Image (cartoon, rainbow, N blue to C red):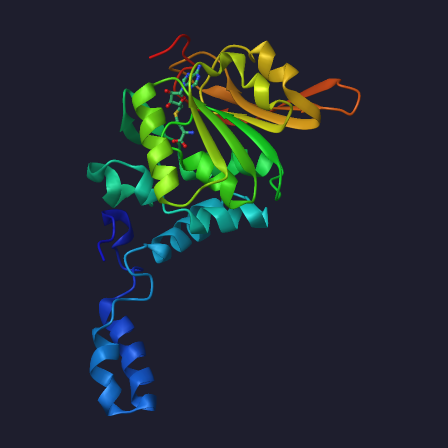
Length: 257
Ligand code: SAH
């Protein structure tokens, strides 16, 4: 298993330690079984589970994320499957990575924050604007949500759709289009997650938010820090807006690409 450089320092598991544990276990079942057992791969079979565990323990939980479903989703979704081959070694660092077309997969701590803010739970109907790699959509689906996600670049939408299907995320539906108009046919949504920054919230998204719904979106100028904003709609349709934390996102684009 290849560990990204930042994780291969002193606290990384030593291959010898795995061997030792397996060897002790095989002593219990007898020498004849020792050879196949020792020859086995480490338990995660290249799934890189232990790197995800470390990412969550060291950065996500440490950053104050407490929602159990969110933490579990971050421990489960194989982020390395959502980045280009050249970036896979760095997939479990807490950083955004390029995914082509000038776009990025968000930093895991930001994905976790946005997921926690919408209070994820099974059956929640979520609209995402800005599919990108499909990673945020997969994290949402992993919490049991049903996800509709829109991407403005056709090539990215196609790639994300194929990838999510291959990984078994059948609760996610990907559409190519401009998310400015939302997804009226599937509205209303219990939650809306926008992963590109604009100077205001597209009105259609506010309209398509259900009563008691939550919307998270970065608001501010491109190429600067933006405010991650949480909008809540009360049962009577009144809005409250809170600035949560500074973030840095790629710009919200218009049109079709
Ligand atoms: N959620 C993504 C992060 C992608 S970055 C992930 O987990 O990987 C933001 C994405 O929003 C980019 O892919 C960009 O192409 C897309 N985007 C920007 N403006 C958009 C718009 N108006 N409608 C839909 N997608 C948009």
